Image (cartoon, rainbow, N blue to C red; front, top):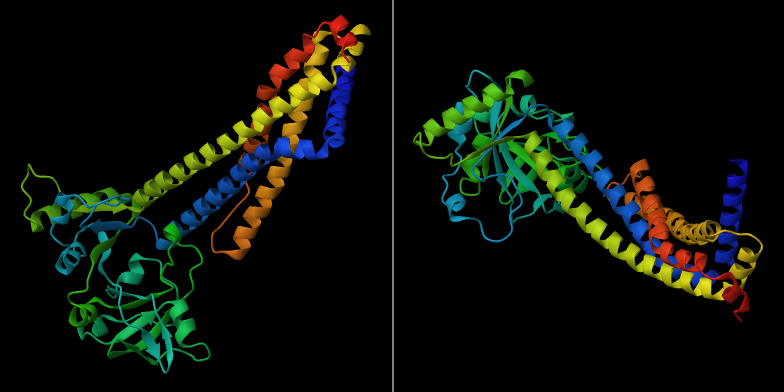
Length: 414
């Protein structure tokens, strides 16, 4: 056993010496391996980081949320099917009816308007904001954290008050050196009083910005000033996680009655939960993972072919050496393992370099952008394993060619 380990160590040492004796050739040979492993490490780290961020975002939303929408959730390519376009809009009155169901703790309409005007305060402006219309129960539904001020009351909702809660980035843009509570911001040609500021959100779903650029107002106020700008959802929270399925059944039954759907007809609305977001997210990252494997596979294939070619050249250059080794007693398997070890050492060196570059790339992305990244043991093991496998697979032909050289002919080779 000790003898075998010693021989293996000697073979690896010879492989390393061979690499360093032809530095430029070795670098060019392992370039494909390096790119393939770096791609694997980088992409898996980014996907893993996004997975962690996504899970944290779901937790921050609250537990057991139920969503009601006109459309089915998902990513669509091309035009929307006619059946979906013809569906009736979700109404605010539907949300109010859902809020009264026995298994529902609270429900709110969720109206959205992407304004084409600037939000401003005394010369400071911001764009890309979203105005949301919700009810006073929304903090019971969605886990909102208010940094300053308060949420609007039921009385302010009934009176359609011009009050708002703004996201952290809006507060930063409009009030860089001021306390925003009590200030009046201009939205179009109307003034709204800021009564609350939300805490900044670091982890958002699908690369969004959470509520950081949102302006939350009572849905009654929204309906008064932006009646034709609404995009309506319903967001509900069951009394407990155990009652989520019962709550979904009650919502579906209620919506079918309100939309006058016959027993033999399909739903013309969609009810889904946070798990739906998780499934959709996995489909998106799964597609990205497939593309990553394809790119890495092409790089490793090119690198493997390069390794095989260079090992064939190496066998030819060392033909006489092989003859001498066989003449003094080396067996076929010794020659075979020698050249396999050299090929594997070559690809493993490229794999380690790719690992370091991939780690550096992931670290740079994490520091320079908002895109999360996380190096995992799985990505390291996968990257290095593929490098080793490439060396073994593409090194077998030249290794067998070397092992099968007749000793006499090898010794006569000039």
